[in-house]
Length: 196
Image 1 (tube, rainbow, N blue to C red):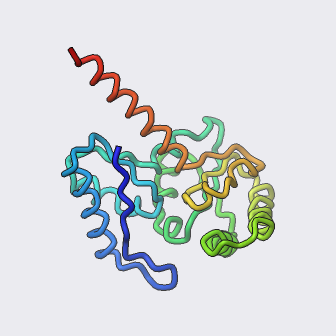
Image 2 (cartoon, rainbow, N blue to C red):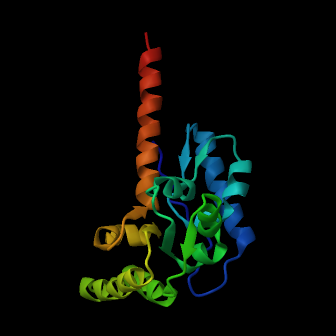
C-alpha cells in the first residue's frame, strides 16, 4: 500500500486553476502507477471533478468514490441531499450521478453553513461551535423531507457528522475506504493462491 499526500494548487480564497489542478492530480497518479500499484483510490471528493480525465491518463484502475456512494444508498431513498465542499457541489458530479441512478437531488440551501463548518474544522474551532453549525444543517435535512444524506467531504467525515444525522447517511470517504480494503483482500488472496 502506498499513500501519496499530494500537494495541489487549491486555495479556498480564490478560484481554482483547473488546468493546474488536473495536471497536479495526473502527476500524482503517474507516480503511483510507476510505483506499481494495482488500484488507486483518491480520497478527495473535489478531485473527482476531474475523474474522467484522470482515468484516461493512467492504465491503473481508479475507484470512484462518487459512484460508490450512490451505489451504497438505500434502494428506497429517492430524495437525496448532499453536503460537501462548495467546489464539489457546484461541479454537479453528485447531481449527475444521483440523477443517473434515478434519484432526485434535494437542495438544502445551506451551503453557507457547510462552508462555515468546513472553515471551522480546518481552523480548529471548538467542537461545541462545530456541533451547533452541524445542527443547523441537520434541521434543514429534517425540514426538506430527505430520504438519505450523502456526506461528500473527507473533512466532514473526520468530524463524524454521519452519526449525528437524522436520516440514513452514506459517507463517500467511508465507501471508498471499504471498497479499497475489499479489493486489497481480493488481490492478496490471489497472490497467496498463486504462491508455491
